[in-house]
Length: 494
Image 1 (cartoon, one colour):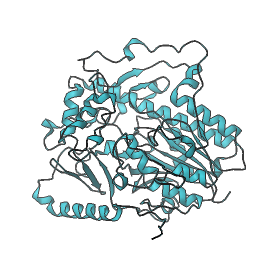
Image 2 (spheres, rainbow, N blue to C red; image 1 turned 180 degrees about the horizontal axis):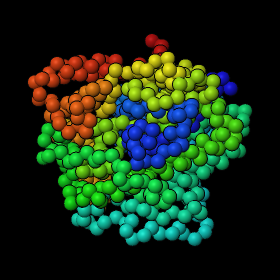
Image 3 (tube, rainbow, N blue to C red; image 1 turned 135 degrees about the vertical axis):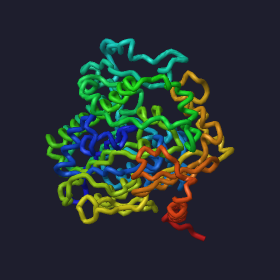
Image 4 (cartoon, rainbow, N blue to C red; image 1 turned 30 degrees about the vertical axis):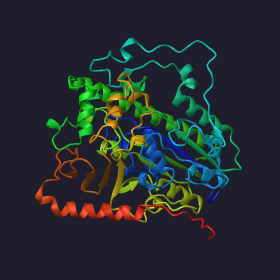
């Protein structure tokens, strides 16, 4: 099946890039991903998303556009198609139009709810309706804390109960089981695309055994501490920290939250392994290109914070897992690569493997040369962006219930999106050694990542870094000039 591989897009939500055993985290269990990287795939240990919340990131990796190209900076500005001619491209539709049978099982955060998903896929999977007894309730200790408590905004639930018979009705389990059944019964005479945008390891931090019990609490990586006084750090972080009200947490409590997060990642690895097993049983594995990546990361206790935010770019938020297994006819050199790559490179890689010539300008670069070992280099810098301009009320996400009342678990973050300078527009330029963040309405950031991987000391005012700062500002300007627009390929009659 040359140039017509099956495609599996395994897209968990909020998985940090360091949460993989094969990149050195001994606490998390990822045997299925580890095995692929050992035998016939590549894991990019320095892969970065282009936005640190779901919708902007998904709009970016499904188009090959950075968020600024069409202003996809909020959870409420998705990809639109206004006619039969693609206005804003979506990789799923591209594959569908080129003959792939596209099956979508999982969350959205990509296209508007008012548009029919039939434009983008043949099937949008729906979970079965429960006909039997209700599921077993989670124990009381897995419920949210009372208002005013230090667990009210923590998202922490811990060990939950989920019986195997209830899995078909659970969001992630249900879609994974449906994907396995699809593979088992699929026609072999057409290329298949399976898109699995899962919910885990997105908070609440909750997981069942055996994964909850798997995590060795003594092997957790050291937690990045809360910055002293938040000096020279973004006001958004300090504001969230104050509102989440978790300053009383002991290290033992943080350990349990973080262990639960890693358990959620381990569960996703198991589900990934189920899909890979189904491909092998169906004789489709060798003919399939597999991609696993998340849309962004999670604080998961680092800096004394949980969840994420829209306009800061710590590595725990921007660095993501990115594992690629090409079809067997591509001579892959398996292993871990430390080349700088971006999620905008995902659609370019799919197009390359499928022989599709794009009909829109985008800014991704195919990863195939890195997969084959032809090169170990890919990019000299990676970028991310978020926030808003003063007066952009339509970018405050006022539609979110969490912006209206403090009883919403996301209120500490989303309510601050109505404030300045907290919600200032910002852009990151990260190289192998340095990270520069331009913040429009407050102090910029500059970190020397080799000496300060936790990004705890902002060196923006250090005169010894003036030369580096000039270079990074020039690099950011070049990037903006190269990617500031995308002229349609169709020309108009005059």
